[in-house]
Length: 491
Ligand code: SF4
Image 1 (cartoon, rainbow, N blue to C red):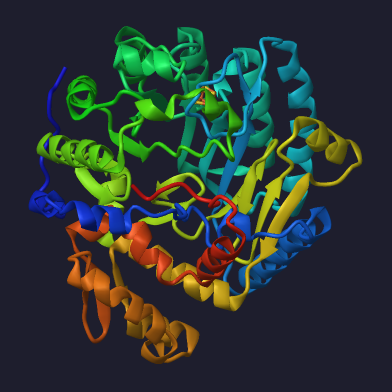
Image 2: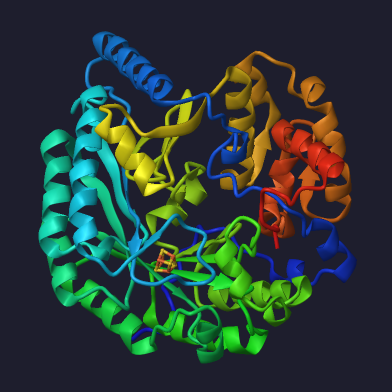
C-alpha cells in the first residue's frame, strides 16, 4: 500500500509553525461553539415550525423552480437527498448521533415501510426535474439493512428522482458489521463512495469507548471497496477520546496513512453528557485536557499534510487531486449537514427519524423518537418536529459564515452588493470583536476583506462566531441562567 499521496502544485500550504501557540491563547479560544453545518444552528430553530410549515416551504421552493424553469428551462436547482437509518446493535460511548440500539432486525422492515411513505410524500413536492447530485445514507448503521432491503430503498429513490450522471452516491459503513455482500450490492446499485468510522486503533481507547474494531476489519473494507471500484474511500477519526495521547494517536495515523483514504475527517470529541447521557459512562479523568488535545490535533495536521493531504480547515483533509480539495482551491467549497461538500447550492431533502432538511429558505428536522416519527407518518403528514423559516437577515449571516469556514476569506464589498448594505457600518461590532483575534494571529483584517491565517483555519469556528447574533444572545442567556452550553468545545 502507498504511504503517501501524490502532490499537486496548486493546493494551499499550511504553515505548521502556526501551531506553536501559547497555552493562554489556547484557553482563550477553547470555548463552546457551533460546528455550523447550518446557520441558524439547530438550537435556534422553533417547535412551532411543523409539518404544515415545511410542506409550505417545499411548495414554495417548487413554485420558484417552476417560475425559473419557465424563464430558462433545465435550470432546476440540484438536490441532495439524505436518508437516515437509525439502527445499531450496540452503542459506542462517544456517539452523538440519533440511534436506536436493537438486535431485532425485523424492526428495519417496519421502519422501511414508514420511510417509504415519507419518501413518497417528499417526492410529491420535489418532482423529478431536479437532478440529484448528492445522495447519502447515514445513521446509525445503514448496513444494518440487508442487501434486499438496500435494493428496495434505493430502488424507490431511483424510480422517483432523476439522478445526475456524476451524482455522488455515498454511504456510511461500519467495518465491524459490513459484509462483502453488502459492499457488492451497494456497488452494483451505483454507490460510488464509502465513508467509514475508524476513530482510533488504540486498544485501550477502543475499550474505553466500547467500540472495538480491528485494523484488519478496516483494512479489508478499504481494500475490498477499492477492488469493487468505489471511487472514494473516506475515514472518520476522533481526537480527544479517553486515554489518547500524542504518541498513541500518532500510531493510529501511521495505519491510516498506510490505508491511503481519499478524505479524512478528524473530529473533535464532543463530550456533552448533559446532551448524550450515555457519555456519563466515560471516565472524565481519562479524557485528554485541552492542551493535550491541541497537541494531538497539531501533530495530526503535521503528519497528514506531510503525507500529502490538504488541510481544508476545521476538521477536514483530502488528497490534493480530490474534488473537495479542488473546490477548496477554486473557492466553491460549501458546508451543509454532511460537512464540507462540493455541492454548493443544492437543496437538501432528508427522510427518516431525526433527519434534517435544508432549503434556501427553510430548515426542518424530523422527530427524533421512532414512535413519534411513526405516529406522524401514520397520520398522513410529514414528520417535522421543528424547523425555521430562514429570513433575509439569516441568509446574510449564513453567507458570511460560509465564506469564513469554506473559503477562509470574506470580501466585504461582495456582501454589501448582494444584500444592499454597508458591510463596514453594519458589522462594525463584529469587526471590533475580531480585532483581538487579529492580534493573536488568527485573522488578517484589511479594508475590504478578512483573511484567515493558518491558526485561524484551526479556530475558524471562533472567527465565524463573531457574526452569529443568535449565539451572542445564547451566551447572554447562559450567563444569566447557568444552564449547560448547547455546543461542544471548539478545541
Ligand atoms: S456504530 Fe456509529 S452510529 Fe452506531 S453507536 Fe457507534 S458511532 Fe454511533
